[in-house]
Length: 153
Length: 153
DNA sequence: TTAATTAGTACTAAAATAGTCCTCTTTAAC
DNA sequence: GTTAAAGAGGACTATTTTAGTACTAATTAA
Image 1 (cartoon, helix red, strand yellow):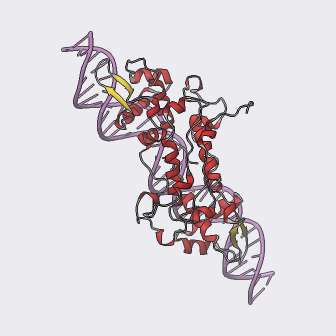
Image 2 (image 1 turned 135 degrees about the vertical axis):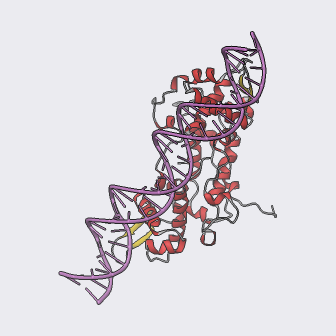
Image 3 (image 1 turned 180 degrees about the horizontal axis):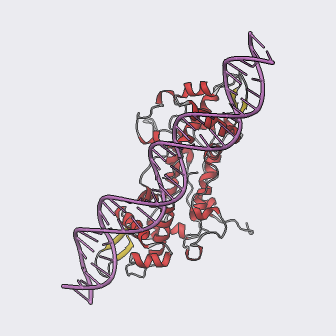
């Protein structure tokens, strides 16, 4: 249930690895060696992370990758988004009024609101947190996530 | 990201529908009509829900389905488990010491602990909550989920 | 100019998901 | 008893998603 993809998991390893940089750039080749992942896969991951703005790159000989910002400013939600895109938790949650079942739906977007709550929680978990094994993390609030927006509050 | 499957979403609709029962049983046929889902799909869902113990059934003519217990005693986590089984958030999270990357892993099960936190949150959300559009829901604690079990606490 | 290195895209293979169908069993009603 | 209405279980197919690879172009240090 509710799983992240293998690639997202790998991406976390890759990010954790390049966060150990002493200032030099990591080549995709080196990251592959350090993480024990296949190089084409590492390349693909790094490209996606650059596109998402989590990592910066330099081309050419002696080029490579580095984190775009410190590990405590990269959130778990951003990592997931970089690899999986902003996919909705259910088909119906993606659109407004586009759901075929809307007229008979008795749960009206409950899963979407739960998803929003989970996302909120994941935004408050940083790469730095993911690297610290026993670190307490921010407390998300699913209650609030399930209260629909209202002009009165 | 982190999405539930369409079938789980449908199952929620199905559960919400049969929760409107006035004491009679719902046939799969009737549920299909009411929810606008295809009957084979509804049948499949209901069978899975029976197996998971969320729904009870009676066979034979005049048979059908009913909730096994009140909607506030059926959790979102149980609905997901019924349809998707207890799938792990990452491959590595499923086993103990079975992960190929364990020796070089720098994130050691962070996603699993996040998953545990999310599951905890979903256990505190009931079918009744899912049916109430503007109802506050319990507040999960991702912090606690990320603190590894320890004999000292 | 060359070698190292990223960027972008396309492609293939594998796995998961969704959806359907068929056969068997059970039970109420006639 | 027989029949029709239901659920149980499993097998099967098609679709979609995910994972992984390969190829070509662009960039840059030496």
